[in-house]
Amino acid sequence: MSTPNKDIEKVEVRVKWDPSAAGEPANDLDIIAATYGTDAPYGSPAYLVHFDSRSPDGTITLNRDSRTGQGFGFDEVMTLELDRLSDAYARVVVGVAIQQRDGRKTFDRIAHTAVQIREGYTTLAEDDFSSVGSATAAVVAEFVRDSSGSWGFRGAVRGFDGDPDAFASVMGSRAG
Image (cartoon, rainbow, N blue to C red; front, side):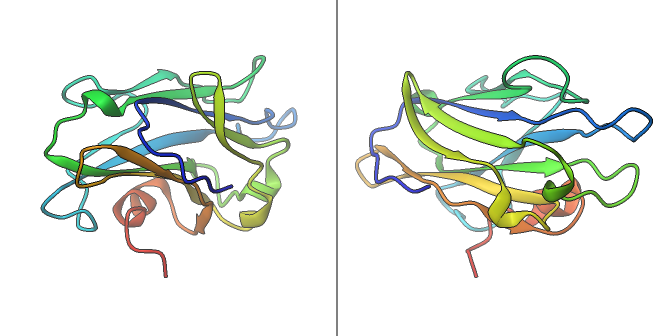
């Protein structure tokens, strides 16, 4: 799921999944973006964007939010306008977390999960979370600004175990 694309300007991260079976708690997946400053690209995030929020400058926005996975096509969509993001930020990490309100739920317990990362009509990466089936959250993309100011894309799905709050605090750590 990796590509050496550089000069990324505006991307969409899209996630879809099937609703839970009748009588079961809802499947609720959330896209989370964490933005890191040039002074601490692997420290604590400068800010997070997720449901009910957006970046302070409007460059990262959750356009579609689903709490059930019902509907056609992609259930959650987040737009990242990297070309407009302040020079104070050097890194943006995007992940997907499963809400754990009704007990532990992992990717392999949710049917037909998929993530797609696109710039315009170009698909940068796609994945179905099968490689991290026992995880409750996963990093799906990393965008890094180089010394010339261009954004590059690193796609790699890395699974985590924990609730969305715990995931948000560690999702931008260095891969171990």
